[in-house]
Length: 311
Image (cartoon, rainbow, N blue to C red; front, side):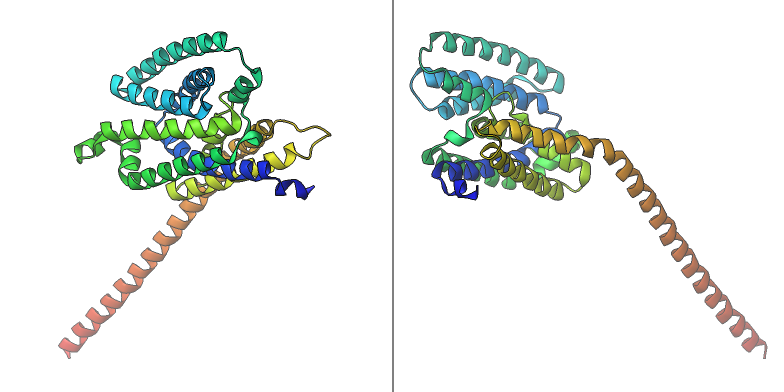
């Protein structure tokens, strides 16, 4: 059973899936924090049109994914300034891209499997070149996110104050959407356009329910994403007599972990809150007792001085 992991196509799938899981977790946290999950969803469908166009021209689907998603990300950032206008811009660009995708598909006369792989992912069909390209773009995305981590985090939670403090909020928004576009293009190779939220949102959403600090959330989301990919591939090559789609197992694991965490997290948060309140009361009591002891000592010393002066 484990001998299959010695195959080159399985190794390529594991390496690519790991890179995608790490990048998607990092990007996914900020997507949720900035309330831009719809943008990530739209970019994946916009990327489908680019991938279909690349296949029509005989190019790699990844080329079309990157061109269309990055172009759409920059366009959305430049057109929109507020959240309401941003969603409107996303909707308009999305409908136009879907129209192009339909046109490209109608003109394409090759194998339908290539289009099927774009929609649902084909992680087991990734070549060594795809692994290298994914690793390069993944490294670029991680380095860029680390470089803008603090201002991006600041502008995600309080953009008005961040702008008043001199943070280039608009430039950060453009740069971040470009990084989202790269992450989406990478994720499509693993889970496809229709299931791109599996790695982009699922692990980060689960991690945010379990921990609060941004660094811990991102780290836990990366671990969850890698586990989903590895276990999903393992199940896909060992379940039944035929290989089931790995994207099915990956998405099922993501949903299966998130659901109980989502349902049970209010109970955990309530217990944490009660524990926090109890700790505060304990600290206040200790502080009050310390003050009382100190006050008693001061009063005793004062009385002693008064009695000494009377003598």
